[in-house]
Amino acid sequence: MDIQSVAQVRAGDVGEGYRILQPDGSATAAIMTIEWQDERAVFWLDDGDVWEFPRDRMLSAFWHEDGPDVPLHVPAIDAGSPAAGLLEEVVAAHPGDAEIRRLAAQLSRGYANPPGIEGVADLAAELYLRLDDAPHAAAVCRLVTGERSADGWTWIAQALGIAHHLAAAAGDTVLRAQCRERLRERVVQHQLDRPILYGDKIAAAMADGYLDSELAWRSIEIRKLMTIRATGGSQTFTDDVLDVMIAERITELRRRAAAQ
Image (cartoon, rainbow, N blue to C red; front, side, top):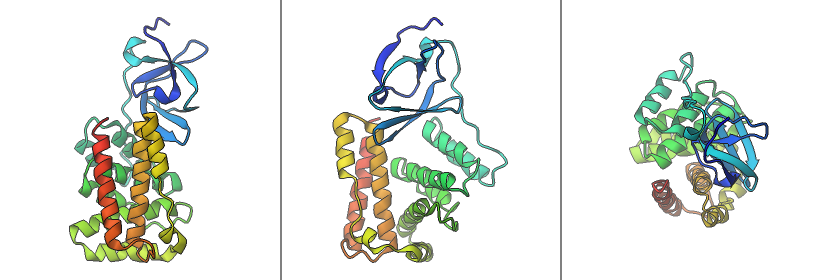
């Protein structure tokens, strides 16, 4: 295989659009999306494969245009999904956004299970927190706000928290009350009073220059605060304090996302 410009780089420094040269001389498909999970890099490839490496693992990588001409795959939305119409609309509203396309395609293959429910929360967060698309974020949240899966409760709660926040902004008191009622079904008081926030994770990612990881931790923290605000009853944070914390963090996430 005649490949130009192969570089030895850490997994944590590989970017979207690159391919990885394997020990046998073959190459992976192009990297479409990268996720950071603690000290590991997870690469979503354009052929649907998912590869995972420690951040410090040295890899041989090259830009996809420097190798054999393999066009980037565009994940397709399953037309048979009950949510296909909504997901196609979401993708059309954000053309060229690989993460929105990936999450939408993933959801079209099912969202009534824990991984699918997690994907709903992730897509809603991407739409609202990063892209300021409140209408589509609210519509995506509605896919699971009636879901009763115990295994997926963490993600259902996040979707309810986002939905409550958007309902408050829209003046929808009925939806706000419905979200709170659902969340109050599973109140764990110490999680409202002493939530684990992620300032240290965010600071570490910034210090290391891992913007994707930084944005992921910021998103998770905002969703947690939204869920606390929507549930109500925290003995540590008043509603006014939570509103300020959420607003400040959304502003900073969008500012940092604009640097991508």
